[in-house]
Length: 107
Image 1: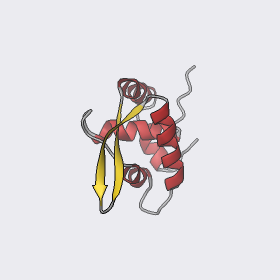
Image 2 (image 1 turned 30 degrees about the vertical axis):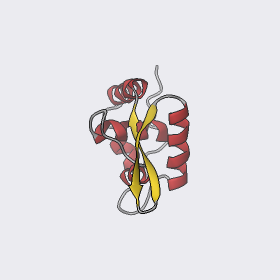
Image 3 (image 1 turned 120 degrees about the vertical axis):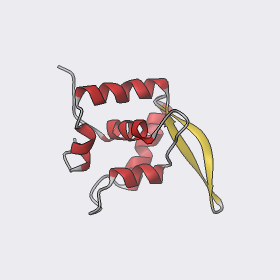
Image 4 (image 1 turned 45 degrees about the horizontal axis):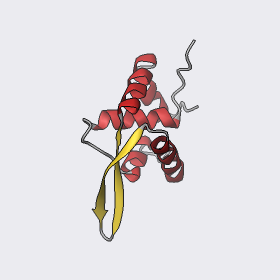
């Protein structure tokens, strides 16, 4: 039986998949905001950033462009074909998984 637990890795992939098409990207800060509920419960910004780096190195997400915010550059991340496949698999195995993750049922 496949593991259907929604981990932070899978939650990030699902969030990017729901962000739009392949030309739509999100910064780490936008991902963190989408994974944190109104009460502030959720993963820390650093956990999201570390997971994004790991997914990027694994080939599941890619950098689209660097967004200029003031004097800082923030990369916009989007899914690769492998990332889209894993996000689709996660969605099919556990359709309400991202909602459950956001409601606090984390692995």
